[in-house]
Image (cartoon, rainbow, N blue to C red; front, side, top):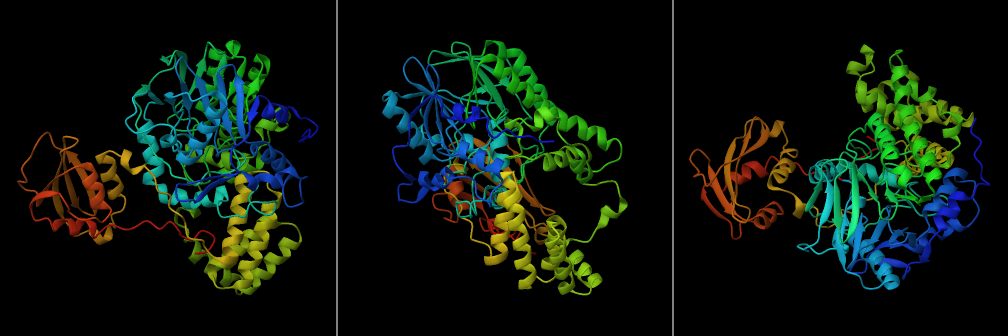
Length: 602
């Protein structure tokens, strides 16, 4: 049984320890005045927990809302509460090394300005990016100019994984991310109270720069502005490309996002590659063996530090056992024939882990993590032939309505289950009612009511945000998504641009289309052949200047001109031979992604 000790104030003491200064302004804005971060929006968390929020989540939200500059140890500082993540600043011989420059250029610049106001106008002499998630590199242009001659250090495959997650599936992840982040919810006790991992994500301008130094193996050492750094590579853990590092002269261990003060995600609700809970636990064990005895403080890219060697070992070992237990018990039960949803209802953590504040379901959850572990090993199919060829949601819903005698009967049954406290099944029934008749106001409003009740009870912040966002969209419709501008696309390679086009090809529309074009990028000295055939857009590199030959057209241009062409700016300055109108064949079969697709309605 869970026996959470609300009298335990150790986390609050650690979250406040080392406080140097608060934010210099109440809001962070873009150059044109758009607000991307509002420090005042968290003030409601100063009050006692209301009935509309799970008390454990309220406690976590109070902790992550703390904002300012904090000293971790001599020469190591953190900016917290300026974004979803932390930015760490390590003082070197001549300047400061920035670790994980937040999500937006604006918040990163504000954080660096606060540091400099307290510690002097130190130049940035290095950047370390711990992993390939946007909230850890997106603010790079707020601390570093493109072309700056300082080392930018990142783990192996950083660029590939950053693009794969934020570009290829970026539209779908952004849309679903609005749900799990609660981006459109009003901030307050009846809406967004936090994401558990941090308060929320900033909405400024993200960017991306390629690393100049790549970390490829555990034990690799680098000296940055006189600071010795020892790295541990941890691919396949919280991100496909991730690393921890140790500062031996500071006796300080950075665990990136591999050990934070919550249960993390094996598969985040916004979508991602399924992570490996087994290797995650193993790398945490390796970190203990490599660094724990030599560490006086542990800090991470989220939350607050842990001080003292004994407490660091306890924290890391419990985090290790958390992921190992979920992995091993899921495998034990799936080998007894249970499916992911069944296992998710069966697994309970050992009391020591269940009662550890840092192992609670604030961001990930036992329920959806167990299903993700099952998915990693077994896939979507549960083994029952019924599951092989089910009707899609709308067709299934219509048949449920027919069996029940109409949507009105489904709604009546669902209302009864909701009144009896079975909100989960009420929601299942009402999903069918809404998908069968999406204009039925009674069904939509009742499902919104049920979602709101489920959200109020959720300890997991991302579950709460999903429920409440679903309720809002049922009542008022979909709010148009704001697509953030930024420097992500400029960092893409030409093959990555081609891949981005390929996933937009409308296959059936392109079945009978064929186009062969050659591309010579003069600023990169790169040559490619791009072929559209059989509904597929493919490319191959060419070894040198190749004449058009069997190509229908050949284009000579720069990468910026290519980006302008894709943005609809035309052929200005682009040289070509052959029939340039063949491009209309390619562009004519491309679909535009929909950032506002429906989720709780068909």
